[in-house]
Image 1 (cartoon, rainbow, N blue to C red):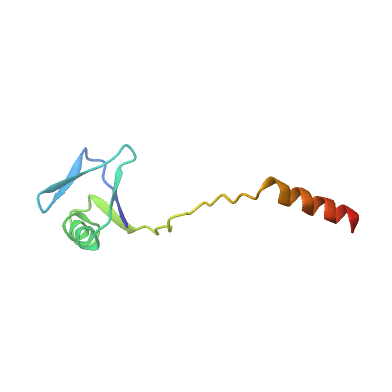
Image 2 (image 1 turned 60 degrees about the vertical axis):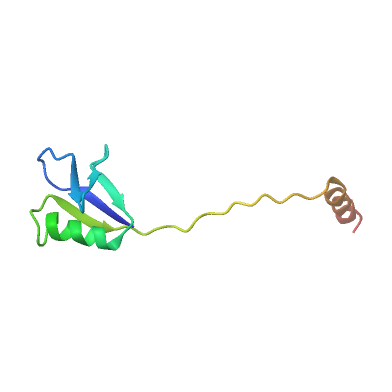
Length: 87
């Protein structure tokens, strides 16, 4: 995933790449999943070869978090507590 951050004070609302318009959010950035699109944006509008309007950064992606809830029948934990008291 790539994050495109507006690095100019000019009032630009978004960037058009291959006929698709990418709009900046309230924080002045948007995210792109495609590396090719991110490269095109960087070449056309980036700090190195473009008109220096945006900065393109690679963002580390966290894996999906799975949260599982385990349950145990009521009698099992009760018998285990009684066993620990006796031992």
